[in-house]
Length: 235
Image 1 (cartoon, rainbow, N blue to C red):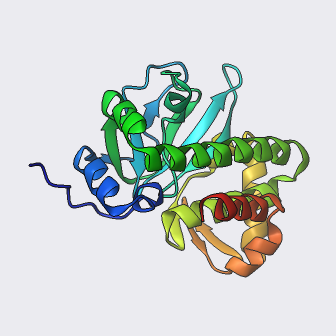
Image 2 (cartoon, rainbow, N blue to C red):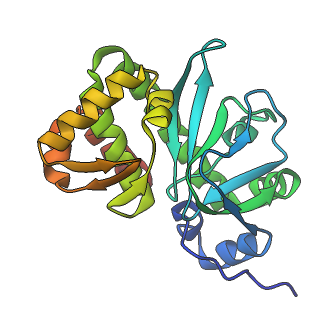
């Protein structure tokens, strides 16, 4: 009989399952390590494995044209990558880029589909998560259109902090500009403003959240809307 691996960190979608279902699913997973800026999948590629982040963070980025990309979603230990499989689609909808180095649980597509068919609790949990992600992507689209860069950056930092489970993380201006779909000078201006308000410290890509309450006040309403949605649907 195979035993479940010893896992560093947790994934809330998995730990929400009944204990027997959780342990059986965990026994089929392989723990893997991601490095910062690693490309996990490109849009249109076949999905051979799905991932449940435990300590890593994955950005979902949609390619706009040859020179522009935009982040539309963020996955940490609250979620998973590979949702198209639930809809019987086996190709990635977005580029999946590692935003936060760390670990994830990997499950092969055939095993995942078998578990989805066999395990009613697992299927129900992922269908709820799919609804949350669809709603969050719609919220992000509106946010990118109507809200100023500083408020969007504050929201992004809060979302990253939630998933990093830490007040400190590393990300460069170039990467932030790539994620938020703005020019680098716009990120510099917004980050300097947040730093001048003593909400964050930022030096050579190392960010530290100094005042979370103040950062929430500087963020747009989208952060609170998305968080409330997740808690209402998934607890």
